[in-house]
Length: 135
Image (cartoon, rainbow, N blue to C red):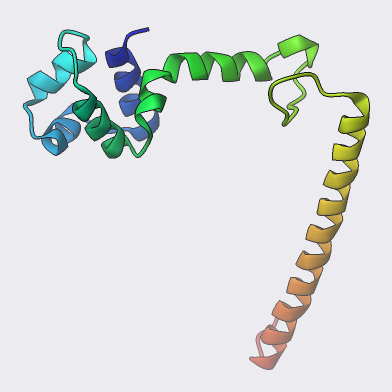
């Protein structure tokens, strides 16, 4: 995939910017910017950095957008037979013991979150009572 295609997809799909907005921020005409997205005009490193700043991403993200998107899709859509399970682990297989440890850690975090929310509810109820607000 070419750089202009990546830039266009990010602009339209992620940022929802108009071409004219990006062109104005770059200080060029909308037609000149369209030529970048249409792969008519090659861009300099400086221009790539300017576009990355507008999109609030790195130049590498612009360059590798299609590959990153494809790798993400492949990883979370049946990579190595995960059958749709989202395993938050990169670069390598996850052992059963790692999965069990992660599962226990998730349960611990869930318990901590529930306890925190219960304390928050008690505090909110006390504030409501203090201010004579029925609930």
